[in-house]
Image 1 (cartoon, helix red, strand yellow):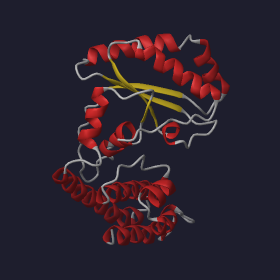
Image 2 (cartoon, helix red, strand yellow):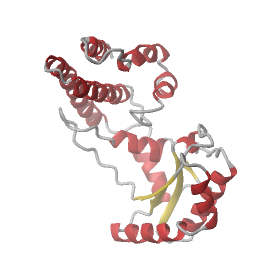
Image 3 (cartoon, helix red, strand yellow):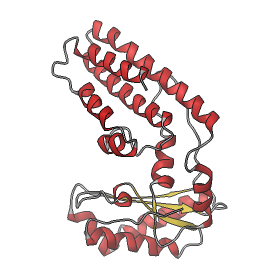
Image 4 (tube, one colour):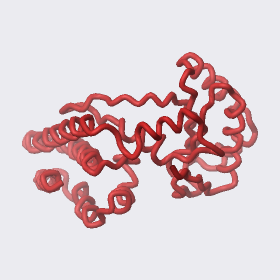
Amino acid sequence: MKLRTPLFPTTLHSDVADIAAGYFFDLDITDTVLIVNSCARGHAVAESDLDIAVLAKENVTDVEIAEATKKWIEYSSVHHVIMKYRSSNRFRHLHLDIINGNYQPGLIEASEPIDFFEVEIGNQVCYAAPVNSSGDHFKKLQQKWLPYYDESLRFERLKNIIDACCYDIDHIPFLIKRGLYFHALYILHKAFEEFLQALFLANKTYPLAYNKWIKYQVAELLNKPELYSQLSPILSIENIESNEMNEKAKMLQALLNDM
């Protein structure tokens, strides 16, 4: 399987990534150091965060991960290059997580928050860029989760997220009737994210996120540019204290029905 190569927007991004990789390569717990999110896809700009996921070996315990995380925080808080990176731009951050690669599907149910099972696999397995090489654990995760996971689980989750999306869409008119316009807007946005989750599940494609990179994901990852042109108007609300959100809910329902 062809591996991604990270592309860093600044020398500081690259230097900090090298420092983090070198630090964790010296630890016995480390399987693979992964650059994730924008830098992994070559879409990062100078203000972008540097996101790193350190995949632990299969036999590493939660206690060992917690101890390694604590030591990394202590080390990185005083390293002069990392301090320089953190102080150089107020909008970019260094995010480093030590992960065990144990991905478990969460609850999908009406009125419950979004479950990010597919997003985690997408960012940490499908779209991640290993530094230097892939360890045995990472290779096993690729074999397990790519190109996509078990069909029975996919069908179950797709049905559940469609039901949850319909529930939220149906809830919006009741909220508008009560004058709860801002709550209705929140539910419309939630239903929009649920629609995106259903869309990716239906197309057996891992998402990056449900709240950003929407045009890139829909137009390029899913190759549905015509659909994207129908999505942006749904969350464009001119007058919140009106019937407008009811109409937007109907638009979203129609797209869900045609999916």
